[in-house]
Length: 156
Image (cartoon, rainbow, N blue to C red; front, side):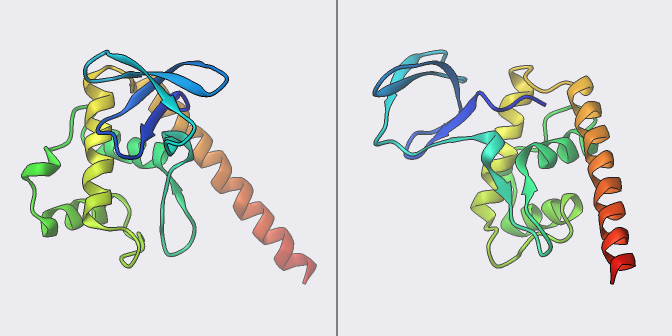
């Protein structure tokens, strides 16, 4: 799941694709409208790849959350989060990430993540091959983490 060139700009609705980078600004394209515009250094720009969900143990990268939604929804769009109540969003999110940090993850964050997922699906930017690859990487990381933990325990 390659979301490193997909950006969010503080104060601007929607998602943007990075087109090019200049000296004082980046050129972005709105995924909804296809309209290109410069985004200057004073705007807070975040790549989706750098965004994570707070959990009780460690942070969950947004791409992993998208993988979980993709798997749960069988590659289809999720229900429109604007039509869901706060309790329904929390229940849906709990299915996906049971240990999300209830103090730091707000309903608005859940709504935004699901909206972003739906937008990427509607634009064909998430595919089953990417999700399977992400799941394989996740499994390898779990095994490596377990092996590292066992090695530390043996050393003690």
